[in-house]
Length: 158
Image 1 (cartoon, helix red, strand yellow):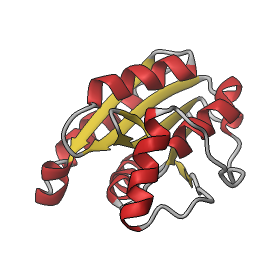
Image 2 (cartoon, one colour):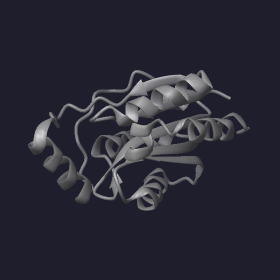
Image 3 (cartoon, helix red, strand yellow):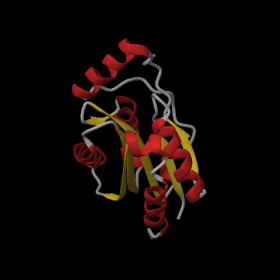
């Protein structure tokens, strides 16, 4: 099974999990590059506003074609109880190319279930696997077992 992991990360938390999953699965990885500057307090406010309004943003074209993979693993931080706008944009632009999907999220407090629900709705597909890592687990390094379990689910897909 060919797997592609795509992710967006503003702070580096989602990137860290993406790298661990990629290492476990030995799969291809593609970072979603947003053209909007989201640094600082102003960038943080823009993130929340765009997520709440389910707005799209402008992203660079992906380097990998998701139609060439059996499963696409999508990673996003949770913004305002949903996916980030760069991930929303990626899905809108590529959802017809997605055969199977799995999701992982990083979040500070709330929004894991609503984010997974929104991701499935937007993709038009049920997730083959999900992984949620909160900030305390990330900072304490208590996420590797979850990454391994999630990776085993992906490896078991036919």
